[in-house]
Image (cartoon, rainbow, N blue to C red; front, top):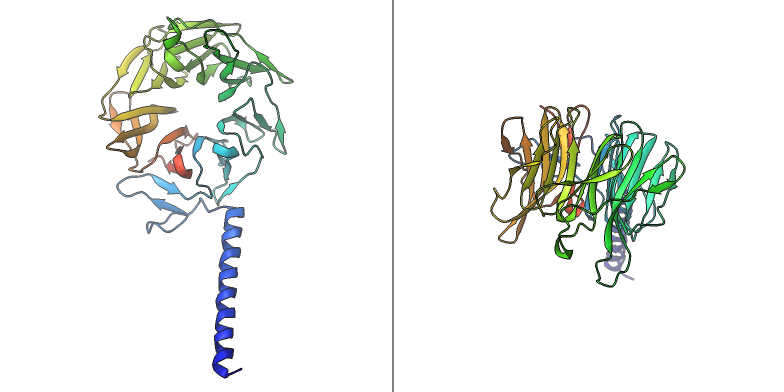
Length: 359
C-alpha cells in the first residue's frame, strides 16, 4: 500500500467522521428542539425578524401543520397540531413533547394555569396536564371529532365538535358539546340550529366555544350559533349560513364571530343582535380562522389565496377601524392567542409559529 493510498483512506475516514458528527447534531437538534428566546435579523437564527413588520418567526422542529396555540400565563407557550404534534416553548427553546396519538390531529389547547392544561383532538381524544403528568380523559360517546376546548373563568371545561349517527337520509353528523365535572365528561344536548332549513344548510359540527359559566357561546358550520345560560343550550340566529370558525365573548358582554369569506359578526354589549360588520373585502379565497382579544384591541388570523399563492392574513380592530397587520408569510394561520402582557402568538401550516411583541 502506497503513501497515496493511506492518505486517501485517511481522507475518507475523516469525511465519514464529519458526516457522523453532522448526523448526530441533527438528531440532537430534532430531539431537543430549537431556541425561541433569541432574535436575529439575518434569517439564519432560531428567531428571525419577518421583513417589513414587527412579527418574528420562531423556527420549530416540525414540518407539520400547527392548529392552535396557548400561553399559560407564566411564559410557557404551547402549540398543537396534526399527527399528535405538541410543542412547548419556555423562552429558551422550542421542544417537541411526545404524547403519542401520532395518528390523531390535536385540534385545540387551553387551560387555566400551568397545572391545568387540556388538549383535544380526533376520535374523542382528550389529554389533561396536572402540572406533573399528562393523563388521558377520553370522551367515548357522542363524539367523532373534537374541535375546541375551553376552560371557563370558573374552572369548568367544555369540549365541542361533532358526532355521527347513521340515519336513512345520510345526514348523520350532528354538533356536540361535553362538560367535564371533575370526574367524567357529560354530554349536553344541543337544540336544532335555527338556521337548519334543510340538509344543505344543517349545522353538523361545532368549531369553537368561549365565554363564562352563565354566558357561553359556541359556533359551527352553516351559521350555527348556540348559547348556554348555565343550565341548558339554546339556538340563536346568526343571520348567516357561512362556516363559522371562532367566537369571542368579551368582559363587557359584547361578542365577535368570524367565518368564511372574510366574515366578521359583532354583538354590542347588552344586546342580542349579531351584525355583519365586515364581509368580502379581500379579493380571492379567504377565511378568518381565529380570534384573540388584546384589550382594547381585537385580532383576527386566517389566510387568503390569490392566483394559487397562499398568504397569512391578520387583521386588527382598534375600536374604530380595521388595519391589515399581515406578516407576509406563505402560510395559513389556524390559531391565535394574546398573552396577558399583550404579546400575540399565531400558528399555521408547515410548523409556522410567529409572535408579535406588544409595542
